[in-house]
Image 1 (cartoon, rainbow, N blue to C red):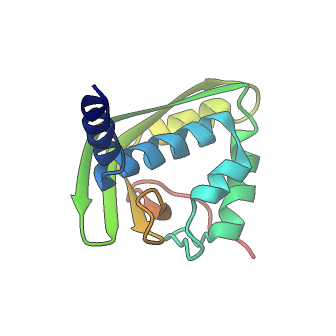
Image 2 (tube, one colour):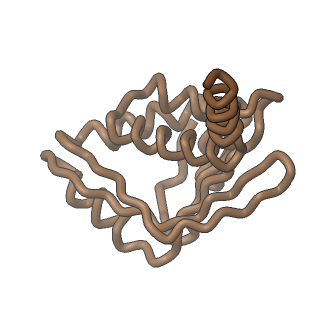
Length: 152
């Protein structure tokens, strides 16, 4: 009986720590952190060298996201059509993202801007260390998404 328990535990641990499973967990938990507007968690998922074509870095992205998403009383992020591309230490997840939410001010404008996009979003995750769970978000992009140029 003990041998059976050890075998089952080993199978579970091997499956749980596989890179594909860890990326899935990191990506899902990052989106949940955005939904919850848990800014410390959001920042913890970002790579120290995070950059994107909008001019954001790890230090500038979170305050601006906080400003935009604070409009929502409730926010749900939905994804579909996921494709995943792997290289040695990098994973690119491409998927369509839609927002649902309510609140005053700009919430309708924000959801309409995101939901009108016909191109999928791409999330680039990079391996940060030897630990199987240590993946960090290095970039996010959508060719159809426009934001005003960031001022320093």
